[in-house]
Structure formats: C-alpha cells, structure tokens
Length: 385
Ligand SMILES: O=C(O)CC1=CCC(=O)O1
Image 1 (cartoon, rainbow, N blue to C red):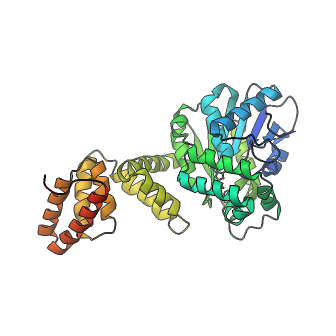
Image 2 (tube, rainbow, N blue to C red):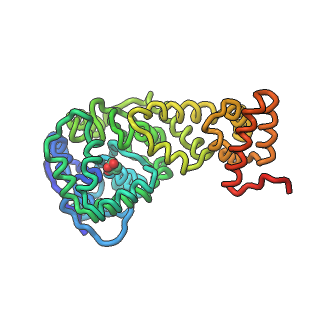
Image 3 (cartoon, helix red, strand yellow):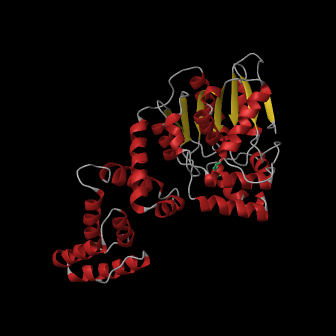
C-alpha cells in the first residue's frame, strides 16, 4: 500500500515529510508547503483511511501508520527525512523517531500527545462515526479545531466530511490503544514541540510533557490558535518549522521545568488516585477548569506529593484526617488512594478515632460512614475477624 502524497520543491533538496491530524488531508499543509518548498522537497501525505489514501480492512495501530510512512520513504527512494506532524501526525512522528531513528533527521511535533486517555472517549467516537458517519461528530470536532470567532471558511468542514468513516474510526481506535510515553526518552532527533495556546483538544501541558521527556527537546507555544494551528496560524507554524529545520535553537527551554513538574505530578496522581479517576478528571476538563487542573497536577502532585520528606502512606493518613475534618467530598477518593498507598482499613479506623477527638465526633461519624461504604465497594474487610 502506498500512501497518497503530494510533492513540492526541488528534487535534490532535503526532504520534509508532513503528516496531518485525524480527519484531515494533505490540504492541511498547503500554506506551509508553499513557503517551505523553496528550500525543501516537501512531501505531504494522507494517513491510511484518510484523504485519498487506501482504507485497509481490519484494525490498526499507530505503529502501522508509522510503517506506512517508512514504506512511502522507500517508495520515494529517500533514506532519511525531516518529519513534522500535527496531532495524529505527531504521534506517528514520535513512533518513527523512536523505532526508525536512522530515517528521521529533525522532528517537529505540533499539537500532539504521547498518550491521550480516556480510551473510552475514542472508542465511543469511533462507534458514533461508524453508525452515523462524520456528520454526526463534525460540529463537535470543528469547535475544537479553531478558536471561537475564527472563520476558517468551508474547506475544513469539507475536508473532515470527506474522510472515509471506517478510516477515521480505525484511527480513533488506534489513538485509544496508543501509549508512546516509554518511547520518548529514546528519541534522538533534534525535536521541537509546538503547542497552540488555545488548544482544548490537546492542551499545551501535554506538549510540554513530551518536551520534558524527549532529550534536549525545545517547546514553543503559538498564540491565537486552537488545535489546527497549521490552518489557523500557518505563518507562525511555518516560521517555527523553518528555523528549527535550519538548525536554529527555537523555543523555550525554560518551559521544560514546569512541564517536568506537570509530568511528575501526573505520574504520582495516577499512581495514587488511579487511572480511571484521573482519566475522568482529564476528560471533564474544559476552558473553565483547565488552569485549575494544571495547578493541581503541577503543584499538589508535582511539588508536594513528590517530596521525599514523607512517604505516600504517611501523606495518605494525614490527608484522610484533614478531608474527614473538612467533610470533603474527596474523602472517598482518598480512602481508595490510601489503600493503594498501603494503608489498612484498621489504620483508617484509627485515623477517624483521632479525628473524633481533635476535630469532633460528627465529622468522624460522617467519615466512618463514607469509609465503610468505600471499603465495602473495594471488597475490603471492615469487621474484626
Ligand atoms: O479530533 C480531536 O479531538 C483531536 C485530535 C486528536 C488526535 C488528532 O489527530 O486530532
């Protein structure tokens, strides 16, 4: 299978591959290709199941999409190329740089993530598209492609609606199954990660996590753009590509420590609260709560829960006492977290006795009730045996 592709620029120039997002085709890159083809042989391609590329039967994963790109390079007789990809295209770029490092020169990753839970959201979207076609999700997708008030004209909707439903759905399923986080430290290509300031589909924090984990990566944020930054701010994206490909040090290394805290916080938050809880919190995040979620992950989880001075078990005991005293709705979540951190039901009971003495019997009484229900739901024994 050969991916549909469009080539611009001199035959003897260095090759730049451009891979697009879910629901896009080669037209996504028309403006950057026009500018960059003065210096590069720009090869824009449609992922399988997209644009004019074939839609192979069956399921596939991001590795299959990456192998399609390697086959395209072979078809073109190109040993090594620069690669830039947006969203799904960036996911393919991370896979390529980690699994075929000899084929990737410089790498640019735009509005993308190495891991994009919850899987259920992607599987639900795939099912909706298989049942009702792209029209059934078009308004929701377009609302996140551009910032409110930006008029992209009719072309992006037509591009999305022109995507084969089976191809789109299979790529949603590939994203549901994707976890490239372990690949990131292996990427040796000089990497520029670009996020869009107003991207609600893949917020800048996820790009920052990539930049924090890929050795030596730089991070830049394009203002005034949402997810399809290549269409909304082609000038800014093209400028960053051009400078990065020319070897200029582009972007902000200072953003990386913040990203590191976010990545570390997210890892601890997942270990303590569980993937299901964190996936729900991430999925519920919107423009109103995004900054708060970022603060919690970076500060509570990335700065305090990660400190060495106390173990997670001790932090859980203290947290239970405080949440019980405050009669917080988060108490049940932290009962489950405490079990994960090695606290026993007997110790939870001791904590609540202490709460009764120092914070008051009513607070302890309410917490005992919640703790008992929560422990029963997790299958923990609460009666003396
Ligand atoms: O369509 C979206 O919601 C955003 C997105 C994720 C991967 C991709 O290519 O687009």
